[in-house]
Length: 411
Image (cartoon, rainbow, N blue to C red; front, side, top):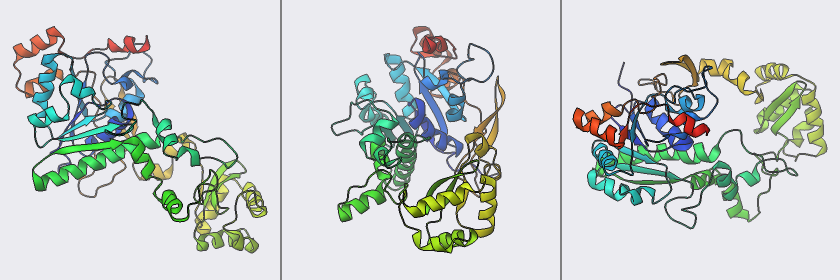
């Protein structure tokens, strides 16, 4: 088997929780060596977040959290106190031999510690430094706290999501965190690494989750810039504004009707023996046409509509609950649920790698690290002697495996 595509890329991940963790997960699944640099306190908060695997009240070294495992397979963990001189020195020594640093702190935090981008660049001029923040490295909101919903609200995406006369509706997935943050960061890192092959130099990649989420409105903004008409919730063509493109209630749940092209809508209308609806394709919800179409969909179950689509090819699919989706024929065939062996827990199921490569496929089955599991190993690789490592552990500049932070989190 060929080496994984990113097997020659080394990543220091200083982030916590979701955006940075998902970014480095994508890189790790494709073979990158990802080292989680965690503090000597509680480390990555998501280690201690419920739900937990197993029945033990006390987690084992921060590896029982289902949320933690879902983001951290295939990585290593070192614990350093960046508020100590020895801890900062160790980080900079690691930077010398790594390709990428992922930073999830607010702008200026690492600078105040003396290990910001400029200092890291002195240690390694070829370093790609990717900062993932809510609002970017400049602008009026750089020091503002935020979460996914805040970013979506500020860039207009949340305001467009939901029914016309209803409240804004939060997505079931974190669009800004994952789509605007993690994916843009992974893309930016790959672009910077590619450019480094030509120039031999690294650079900073500034990823704002608000910026990334706004970019998802490219077509909506393009329409507004063209005609000046302010888009409204429930009136967007691809977000509840067309009879032919919206969810409908079936006899036992919901289905999606995505018959946007006239050929698909005509196939639907012909299949239900309603040729009179063909010319009503682009009418709005709450119209007489919408009520008639809604009545048609209520006449069948989700399975019946799936069979109907199999026959007529008109972009109608059931709306599945998560348990149904994870056990679906599609997900199984695409290997989007995988199993990995996690020490102390046995077999654990995970969502698989979304990028399929024909010759060097991703490996999403490697276990996640215990808290500080690789501290000794990493410091030794960085050139520290056993005596120096022992002194760092004794002083608190570094720490090895420990479950103590679990009680701190729950307190």
